[in-house]
Amino acid sequence: MKKIILSTFLILTGFFTLSAQNDVLPNLMAKGTNMGSLGVGLPVIGAGYRMTVPPIAAFYEVGILDLGRPGSVAVGAHAGFWGYRYKASIGDYDATYRYFNTLVGLRGTYHFTILENWEVYGGAVLGLKLESNRHKDNMGTTASHTHVRFGWQILGGTRYMFTPSLGAFVEFGYGFTYGTIGATYRF
Image 1 (cartoon, rainbow, N blue to C red):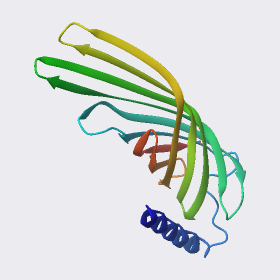
Image 2: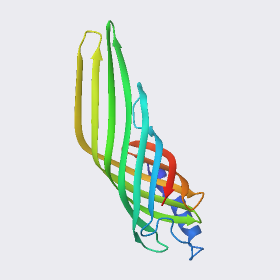
Image 3: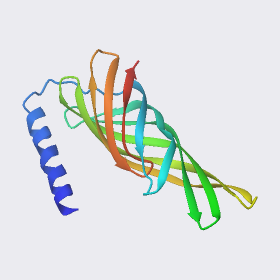
Image 4: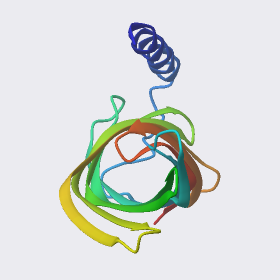
């Protein structure tokens, strides 16, 4: 873990040093900028589980504070959904468990433009996680449960804008997904 933190720190230091060479480079996410994104991710599931619905995330951000060269702050909304199942067999007993997870919350991010049309960002999502599961076995037993819990995601990512209004992003994190890749529309 120490190596990962040190490596991340060194990479970000390199980006900050590189971008410090150009004082007139504007932030991609400036005050009043609106961006909407849609992506598909890798789920946070254990061995033996099979994904039935890949993680699909949609989020909207608006820039609320432009700090110039240090970067900018954005807030917005985040919604994500994914599902998976698990089959268990012990002797003559067979059971299937199906899980569906939804995360709806508020998103806060800090953006830093490192090169023209390219930025890195980090942040968090805090909200509600709706967990629904269903159990069915060959003995005729069926059970369903739904729980509402505190939901969260810590994330870091990068975004490149191909045109003034269309770009792509990659995010890595923990909580809802390990990583997400998708498209961004700026309006």
